[in-house]
View 1: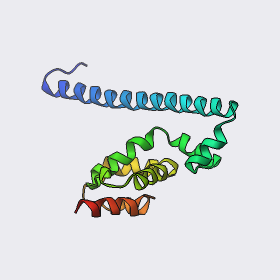
View 2 (view 1 turned 120 degrees about the vertical axis):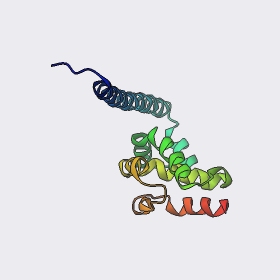
View 3 (view 1 turned 90 degrees about the vertical axis):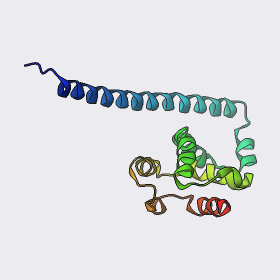
Length: 147
């Protein structure tokens, strides 16, 4: 039995919204997969050329740390600015070393899922991120520079 009228139209619009969100999520996963694959290929090329260890030494990252960064790429690059924005921290006011450390710490973080969930659901006043965010101290420093 078909239903007509405003209620049926709203029901269809709800499904369209759900489908659109799911498709955006699937596209994001696919895009991230492609970005990680490209990064892995660049790292493999650097390894073939014999320059990977020199680059890692220059930037102070170990091979296991590099693998963790690749697994979190490019999501960490979205989560950190979103976290800073949610907290009201201006990362541009930090010195370059502190910004680098924020990015590196977020890149190797194992709590991306919790971070993503907190950003999606927590209220603006929530401080639950303190239980999982490895960047709490640096974010606090950024907040302190804003006041």
